[in-house]
Image (tube, rainbow, N blue to C red; front, side, top):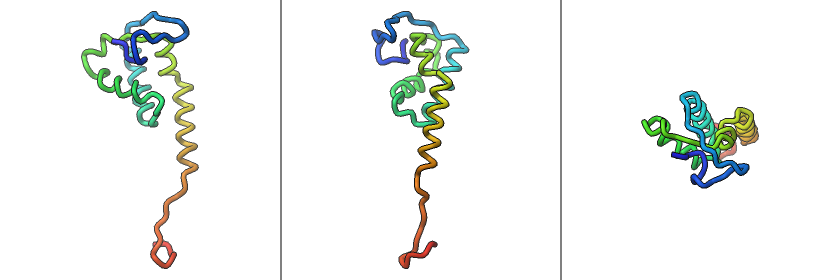
Length: 106
C-alpha cells in the first residue's frame, strides 16, 4: 500500500523504488502526520488524512513509500518551518475585543 503520494505510479526525482515501512519509520511518519495535521498543513492534508486511516490499523505493516517522499514528509526542518509560519500567522492576527453599544469595552 503506497500512501505518501497520490498514486503508485508517482515518481519523485525519477525514483520508483519503494521501501517497506519499519517500526521506526511508521513511528516517524505517524509523528510527522500528527504534527502536520495539528499545524493545519493544507498542502499535505490528503496524505495526512490517508495516513490517519491506516497507521493504527494492521494494514500499516504493509505500507511502502518512496524514500524521497518519506524524507520530504518527515523532514524535521520542514516541520519546524511550518511551525514557525503558523506561529507568525497567529502573532499577526488582531486581538478580538467586546464593546457595548456606547463604544466602551465590556
